[in-house]
Image (cartoon, rainbow, N blue to C red; front, side, top):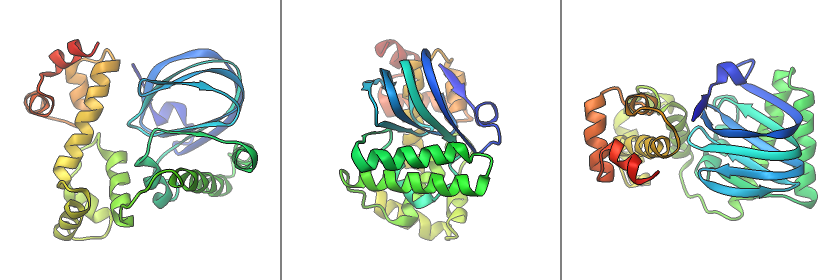
Amino acid sequence: MEKYVKSKYIKNGYLSGVKKTENKFVETHFHDFYELEFIISGSGTYSVDGKAYEVKSGDLFFLTPLNYHCVDVKNARLYNIMFSGDICNRFFLSNLTENAPVFLETEGKTKLYFETLLDELCNNIENSELAVVLLDAIIAKLEKEISNTTKSKSLPLIGKAELYILNNFRNKLTLSDVANELALTPTYFSRMFKEEKGVNFKTYLNNMRFEYAKKLLEHSDMTVMQICTECGFNDYPNFIRRFKQHTGFYPEKYRKNNL
């Protein structure tokens, strides 16, 4: 399973937007950025985290760095937006990531809203300030639509923390790093995070990493060593031991059981 990286797929490193027609199959992949696709017309199948969707006009997909997907479409006209998580409004983005991957079927005024703003974004992609404002409006509207069917009760600061963790879980990340990002003391952040999420920071971070490792074991041909590094674990023996504690199986055995 190929990893798409910002340096290759996003020219300026933070935001790209195109309107295009696709007739192709794209093999299962994942990336270190966020992606939004809106179907204007055409047909085909999107498979996101192993779940297949028959696409049609008005369908919108929102994916985070934790999701993987493949695409098989015919005469599909669509908008594709790829962006870094640090350029847009963190409040709306953090709420969306709680429900990701997001699949939204739009129609009427809602469909027109997304199509109009996405067209404006793609046409003004070289105007970075305007493009980011348009992206924020799109993300805010998507968050509002999703919030009508889901109930997120996370505190705003916790949402920002979750977003920061999601954007950085592959790197060496400490509780102090996140606390500093939120301008809080580590002690206060640690207590607040555990009260809100029910687990401490380290457990939350490791759970995210292990869930990602499970996806890579199931859907990629990466070696266990590569997966260990990709998920942010720097100590290979410790990763093997703790993966066994987390899942009940060593990584190779887990892969064989889930092929």
